[in-house]
Length: 294
Image (cartoon, rainbow, N blue to C red; front, side, top):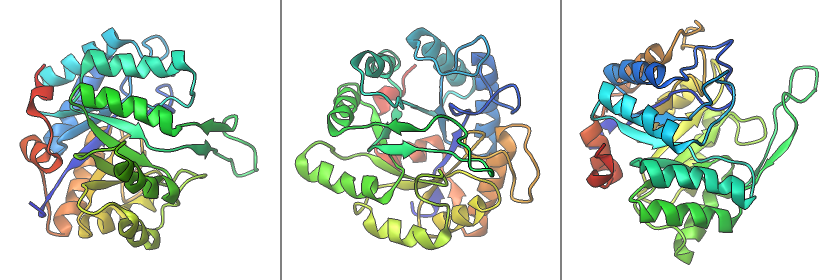
């Protein structure tokens, strides 16, 4: 099925401001955007749950997450749901929040931050976009998430923000911490992580565990589309959405996720690949079908 490419829609993200960008927040908005993405060729929806007042901050409310997932499944019943789990803290009370959400919702997939990173963003004048933070993901924290995912039949999507995190995956496997099936996301474009450079991608592919499905997550503007194309050419899977960019290949600002998915599907087709259906995505990722039942 190498001609089939899994297209993931990164629906909303955690830092994007719904007051200034077209970020879906409510269950109805997220269901509508998911339907548009599915119609454009997405087979996976990656989502963050937002508090429902301003929509500006994350929520780990399991009931709200369940409402959102139910709304999405009603709008596009076959779609694969991928929930975020990212919390920067090692504090037990904080870590318990996404763990409880996974236990209650049991999505087919969940993002796993596979290592720690100094998470930094800087403006053109050198000031910080946000207070510098350590996105802490110790081995013991990673293990807690993997144990919960395994217990609930959830496929880990290992997000790697630098080469050290990527290389750790083989160490996790050798140690018995990480078992297949899992998939890898190469996160490129975060200022303090791996840069969004096409010449880096072949090196990352060489450092990846053999035979594991992988995708590029590329944060940025014009520079992201060359990497998406190279990813498709090298057999990787594709992700885009409002979480990752607000701009189409021609530089136009988007009004929602649908046009971004249409654009990345066109990139895939230009290199001879077709978007996978949700059923094909499940086969490629070796997902447990029972986890998809609403």
